[in-house]
Image (cartoon, rainbow, N blue to C red; front, side, top):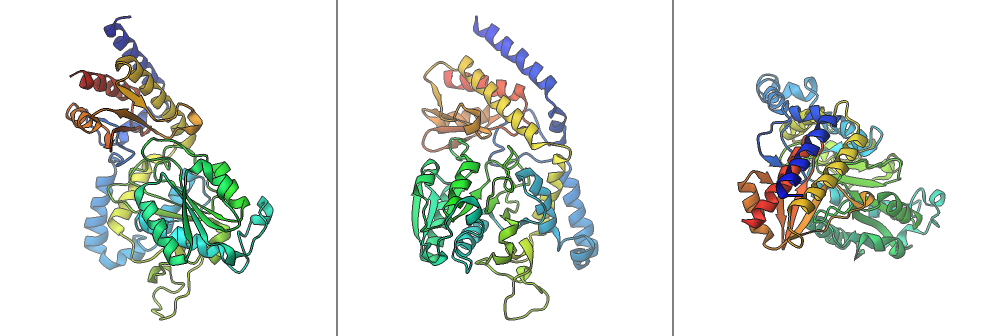
Length: 420
């Protein structure tokens, strides 16, 4: 078959897939142009309703109501209210997610808090007996295991948390965790998906292995929340964190979130107690007494402008099932990889993203010689992905607004760029 015939066939297939896409109407709810935007795994596109909502926050809530908006516009309750909107997207019941601060800050809270929980008066993991653990004395737990392939900040935070808690730090590949976790392990910090390759790690089995050893499982969901089902409650995750500016489209620097499983909340001891996590925040008492529930995960004054922009952005999820998003994500990445194989001469790029659906997130990473320059030229031609040193092209597929036509065009332009 000629190159022209192959291109025509793949374009026809893309049109058919887009016509059958149950999520296709969602694309109109974003501010998009002719660019093929495949960088939603770094910064999601702007939901169309956000500018008007933020304008109201600025002009009316801040400009007219001013301080009254803490009560009348619901500013004070925003961290928990927005947390409850994120909860179904990650498989959590209400009352377990609080929004605020950066991902890095929340990783620190979660990891140090997990060590403190593991060393608590009850000893080990509160649910260890039920899940097969032996209920080892908490005071013997002096190890933090961290994903050796983690995003650098998580590793830096883990190093600091280990120093502060007197733990030794053990970096491991996620697959090696079940054999290594022991009665000395307090907490394990893992990424749900590898940010370089898009590899999806087995959250259910890894969580079960950690809990069976009496340790606590802490998950970073930055590259999966909003792209696929997570199942925090169903799989027994202890604590989790995530950003909101990738697949949740909350905007640059939008606040992150902290998940604390309900069974842990009464004993969760945040290393960053602040006035808004106090049981009586306006009492201005010198002694700290933690608030009830997940509110004890708060620290300081909420960042209202970005917080409410995020709340508006979450409207695009109304009526959307995460399972449908996952199905489209896999179909998109499958189709893109087929287009790359059809258009790009063999040997010019190599996919380092797993082929198996169970091991794939919502991005495709291609190893390519001169990847940094290639990505610059792709962006100049209207295909936006990103580059990770030394030789990786990353393409993130956000199912709410990326089409199959986008996937075909991206692969075709990649081939043309490599031939130029």
